[in-house]
Image (tube, rainbow, N blue to C red; front, side):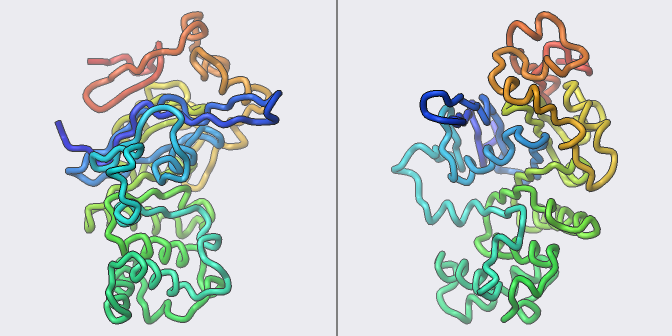
Length: 326
């Protein structure tokens, strides 16, 4: 069995919406299981419409939320095991890249300040001279340099340039895993492919795995090794990117394929159904059944179990569109 870099085992996150007395429970992430092998770096894209649980799952991997159920294991160490958890090592191993680069940097500080702080405060560089070298190397990895960046403020960069600085900052620690939460959502369409191309280059050059949280299915198809589709907190389909997107097995994934034909398109407005949204989270049977054109009585009685389709594919459906299962 391959050694795992990351294991997400039966993880759920529950929030309370409304007041203490009349508030309702919202299962934002519902029994999700995923893993990334450590022997080969990959880009795993987590896709789905707004409110599906993508960012909540991302925040649990980053330790910004604790799972209410299940466990997360990084490099063999369980997040819940306080004895084996080393906050310093975690910051070296796992780095985030967030959606809006302008919100990641204060307008009052030059951007190189953040890069130096990462190098010096985490002990990667012992002095300013070593930090200069590390920062310049990280910036050159993303097509920039310390000479170009030094002394400049966030407003002096475009969104795409500033996101590259964010990526360079993450690279300084030489992480094993980067969590990129909607990293191209606030960037001009002309720059989107530059950023996702960079992810592929860094995966191959530095052997870094990525979890790419995205609305943009076209960039996900282009950049991903694997795709995980979430719907109302449930992992409904998982597998190699090409197989998932060329022959979707779940009706929801099929709907996404037909709704997002071009780079930069999103499906929020097309697919959101506010009158059903709240109810769907609390459904105990298949959460997609109220919207599914193929739903049967079986789908409305009990939630399906994960069905394997070959060695690497999984679908949460009683009636997979591609019924060729091993």
